[in-house]
Image 1: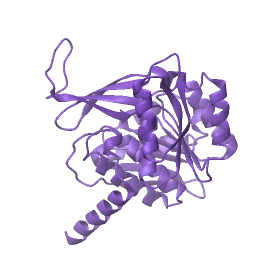
Image 2: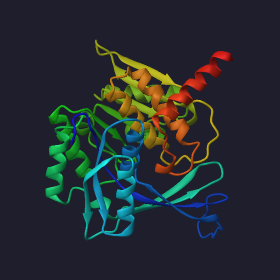
Image 3: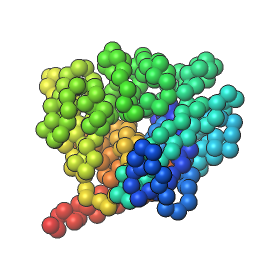
Image 4: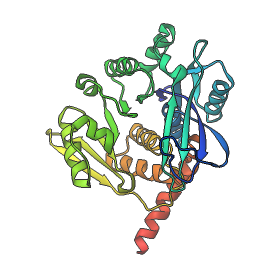
Length: 322
């Protein structure tokens, strides 16, 4: 693995997308609009692609089945220049799939059949290769669509190697505080932050309080994404005080929120590894994810670096004129 490569250990899914007039209720049959769409996804793979398109050298570790979806998922990663040597082909489980209902306002409902993703960590030969790669990467990025024990072990390996570890706590599941304290950065949305803190978030002020609480538990960087309100970051100052930074989101026409959070996590990681100041890294991530939700599909809608930079520049010019 080349020096300076970001390693993502996580899930690969084939997204099966149906456009619906609204979300179905229990027992209801809805007629979808148009045909079923197949788009490569999975939180781990989405974040890997997001980082690659934003200019980073990226390697992906995970597991797919020995089926056509697995081959397509690998091909999609390789098309973005991602190193897939650590993606194993499983002979016992099918590739992961996600069933996505997409409403006209861009909101979605998702059911995941994890398949081979739930066997990441079951193959000790693969895990030895992953641990070796962790010791040489510039940052380790994780999510929770693979077994929790594997995530905990990878976090510990990254911590022991002195590698920055970024965890996107999604889908929301509890992890021990002893594990969370070994992170460099924790990225959560309002629901995930509420689950960890036990405090509900209904406003920006609530988010600030919760971010301080989580930061106070020993996590150096805590980021809470807030949808249309942007994102909020809590970090430790040189004398132990907590700094709070808020980055509002630009107003956009939402087409598809799928992978918006993955785009954020990837963009923040890229900016962090480039040693951008935290406020700048937060801004870059907010704008990248805002641009993503204006496009259809998970990986198909992830923006390139030049698009994000042009979008930021355009918004600055508009703000300056108003």
